[in-house]
Length: 261
Ligand SMILES: Nc1ncnc2c1ncn2[C@@H]1O[C@H](COP(=O)(O)OP(=O)(O)O)[C@@H](O)[C@H]1O
Ligand SMILES: [Mg+2]
Image (cartoon, rainbow, N blue to C red; front, side, top):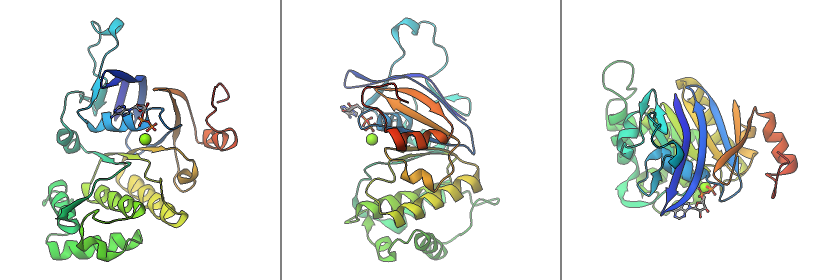
């Protein structure tokens, strides 16, 4: 499981996360919601190990803290590099995926696939790039992603929605244990939203993955069953509850000043 204990994070000397606690077990889907600027992406980048996001134990506790701020399957990952976290099965889909024009999309996905799906045992479905190309095209079709894009450089000239679908393909080939999706729904039309949400739901359930869905809007959550909802505000999780909290947010918003939630 992912265990986040009293997580404090600073960016360029400014404290952004001010004590976040969260536990996500395999097979659970958690939604982290909140206004812009509440710290959602900071949480995602911190989990992924972005070097700009510095984990700090609060002063009053610093001498006592023995456990880490973030643990995955019992291992403290606070000091691990992003690739080491990825090796432990953590996958982050970015809010703003980068384009890498020189890197062929299909060969990029194939490289990840080979690395993440062991050639022995039941892990690897396909064994050659030719087979892989067919397989990934099938997955792209499910997402309604134009197959021509797979021949381009990674995210090169992709629309916002196409980039998000590419993130989902990366998730599929990564064979992850834990997935963090940061605003995978932003800039998507309803059809794309449904396709992405149903794919995530299917994969999460099929592979018993722990999922953290970060979103500003509740619409994505119509298509994926959520076990817990957390409302983030000013760097802390202000309220947690079951999926009925989503409806409440739809009716009242996150609240601008306040204690409505
Ligand atoms: N790399 C960064 N450099 C400076 N400030 C940052 C950085 N990342 C986040 N922040 C600040 O942290 C706060 C939370 O931002 P963010 O985590 O992106 O919120 P959200 O994803 O909920 O919209 C904001 O005030 C933002 O300006
Ligand atoms: Mg964000």
